Amino acid sequence: QLQLVESGGGLVQPGGSLRLSCVVSGLSLDTTAIGWFRQAPGKEREGVSCISSVASLTNYADSVKGRFTISRDNAKNTVYLDMNRVKPEDTAVYSCAKSYTCLPTIRADEYDHWGQGTQVTVSS
Image (cartoon, rainbow, N blue to C red; front, side):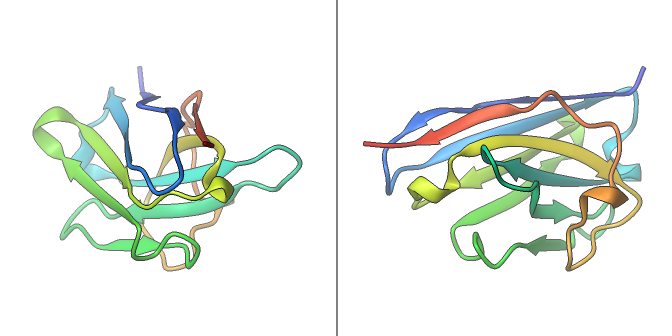
């Protein structure tokens, strides 16, 4: 059964760091692209970052470029999102999902098999 499970969320102070994990089961990670999305209360879901199945091509939303890094460990079937220099506006539920490719514009309607999400709160 194909399943994506996120973890690593929590409370972090502004300027701090956090690592999110997306564990994929039921599918080999090297056959799929994975994207990270976030949704804050009252706002639309936003594509944050994605990584391709091969060559580790990555893309980022302008709002996180230079602060967040996406990576993958195929041996662990896990994709990571390293969040650095976080800001209060990064507060949201972060979810991962799979797609056939990682495009510069990270659109939710091109992804499926969503995880349940993990809450990230940036506050002092």
